[in-house]
Length: 91
Image 1 (cartoon, rainbow, N blue to C red):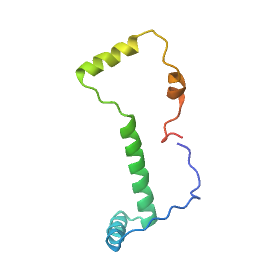
Image 2 (cartoon, one colour):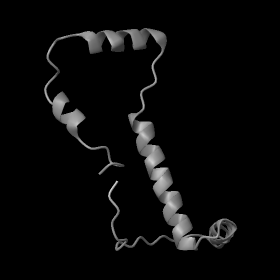
Image 3 (cartoon, rainbow, N blue to C red):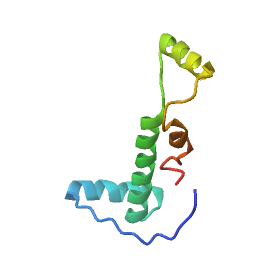
Image 4 (cartoon, one colour):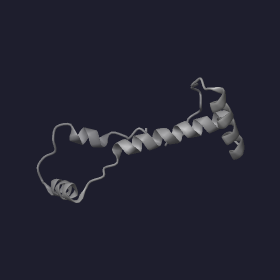
């Protein structure tokens, strides 16, 4: 992943309790509140996107999937382009 300067700003409103909790967690890690929230949001975003791309199959579905991979038929329209796209966490 390319490293770029942090020049974009995100603002969010939180309750007093949320702020105290996040400040305490940031302090426990020796991070600023901003860095703690940035890391937490970034990590959660990657997790959510990975959950959307993982494929979990039962035995029957796995057999059908593997058979489809072995099939020499041409892929459906758009399939090649889809698999050539970068994933959001690689972009």
